[in-house]
Amino acid sequence: AGVPLRSANGVCVGTLCAMDTEPRAFDEKEVAVLLDLARMVETELELRILATTDSLTGVVARHAFLDEGARAVSLALRHRYDLSCIAFDLDHFKTINDTAGHVAGDAVLAATAQTCAALLRKSDIFGRLGGEEFSIILPHTGAANAAKVAEKLRARIEAQTTKSELPHAVTASFGVAALASAPTDLAELLASADRARHEAKARGRNCCVTAVKRPPEAAQLGRRVLKAGSIVFNRGNSVIDCTVRRLSETGAKLDVIASGEIPRRFKLSIELDGFSRACTVARKDEQSLEVVFDQF
Image (cartoon, rainbow, N blue to C red; front, side, top):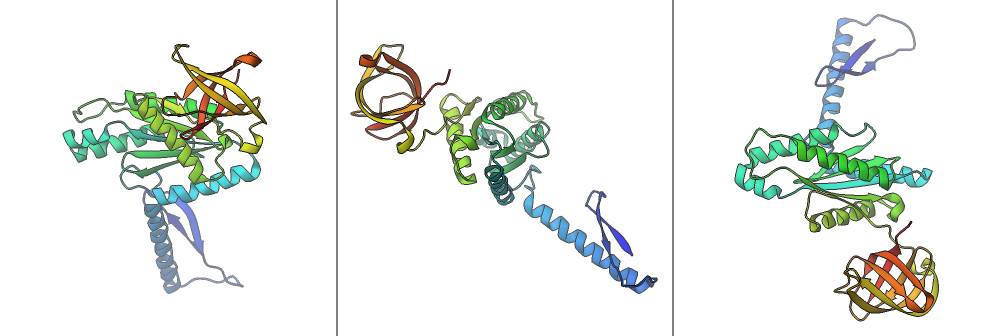
């Protein structure tokens, strides 16, 4: 005998069966017990869904997102396929809450989640990490394609309409990070995407930024050298002397007197070698930089 198991919206998700070693008929009492057990299973399934779903937006809740994301990252590392993460939040969301009210703010969050979910694949993991912050795990997706997804989401969020009168248009800032850019677990991947998101904020909001590939460890940064170099920026109008300590085809390690005024992107020049490459800062402390050369 069996009783169908249905979700809250009436969709059949399985069957609870009772079997014996020999065929026989079930009396009314046994059928009633089976029905009761089926209702218990349905209730348990519903509770699990509620525990893993954000009640406001309908996307994956924070705890479940971290669990599912960790499994996805582990599989990607084990089977050596691409995986990327998108982190985004709504710009000036506090102003919306303070001006239009929390009901309007909640409506914006729910509408944004629905807008984004409609553009994502079933295999993507879309979660709300708290407040107006969301993250998405995209299996089998490299950085370039993840950046395209982020831009589509950004444009669709900006274009969405709201029923409430808001103090400004709804926009979002996006950070993108790929597993191949160095993170070895979900925490590092989220942190990398989050740093890129903060960079998007710094660039004026309502834009997408992809995390820069982390350079190799010191032992792989290239051969040890001791060369006089120049950090050139501001269209060649600003030059800071540096000492090149390591150099490879993909990056370099530089020593400087102070790194505070050095921008994120500049041109590294080694005059005696006739060397000049555009590069991006990947790591920085007070007196040293690790940079990645732009790839042509």
